Length: 514
Image (cartoon, rainbow, N blue to C red):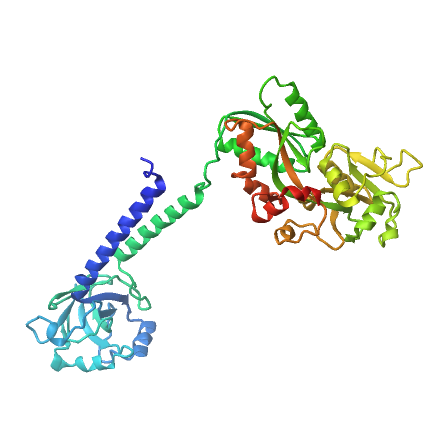
């Protein structure tokens, strides 16, 4: 049965236990508290001796001046209280004697007694008189019929001789519709427990059940299963900037969908798109199990490739940390990449030569940069190591690298280096910082707020050769990435999914023409 899961069993058990506990408490409120109860406890039972120190203690107490010196004297402190919910009147004591209760001290003789005066209960002292039966004989102490309101108490300090400390002490007597019983032993400063043992036990059990249920609910994966899992193998190629996102989504898909293998082999947007076109042309039937991810739309002349708009990706210009500039105008960026700015001091920066760290011709990140920011291509490559010119006539050093991570590490290592990258990878890199463009900060959050003025951004496309059948791994993974559980991965990597309200606007077909 589907409902017979661990969390459901714990939930039902907790509910039943709660109902039972409520019933028990209701019964307890209706039955037990109506009984009248007198409780007593021994709060102290100490030997006081006959030496000088104990003599000083006796004199300090000032209670037993007429008692003889006793080498075997003991001092007992008794607390008697009304621990029920109803008041106890003097006629609620059922004994035939004049007094109400009798305290019995095994093997000891009562030599003297003093009654304390509880705060707020001065009226109780009037009942401790010989006429009310208060007194002692041998090992017994007669306690008067003292009326007690709920939670009210009094204490008796009793001087004894003979016998050892710790010998049994009990109080006997009868209460109409109630009982006299011993309470938990406590020291004079202790307070009686606020809740009974039964109440504490029920509370602990309920708490454990609720915590267990909470752990089960939090720990379990509530994500709905991916739409239409498929088995088989799939290769995702293309953009290196979007590759970290695809790798994590692929790993998550493989965990969610057993029997699937998704390999990510990224080596540039254009190279990936052309590879897909070639594999599709060679296939005798159907669509190859390949997806090409591209930063921006595919080159013209590839009509057999079907597009799927996945997300809006934000890119950023980055400079070495030694270049302390934080903002450049689009006009200055164009001058940099035309070779018209050769030293950063020309833009108000440090005295460092400009070194352009670019991507190769297959890079979608480069193509987006040229299309969205420069409005034209970059100047010719002039360096293999990104530091020295191979062409002495070149205005500035410019090198080309194969991958986003490689470009970022080079900018961080080369003094005066400047380059470009996908935003999230750039934010995580060390030794470099981002540049604003015309005062606009590269930010996905700004796009979600409707600020579309930052220019260096592009739609991320996923291309297939034709439309793959719905039951294939290609189709399933595309759905997972663009509309299924993979959307969380896309967001985690700092991209704006096309399926979001703002993403739908930015991913509209006319967005590529703006």
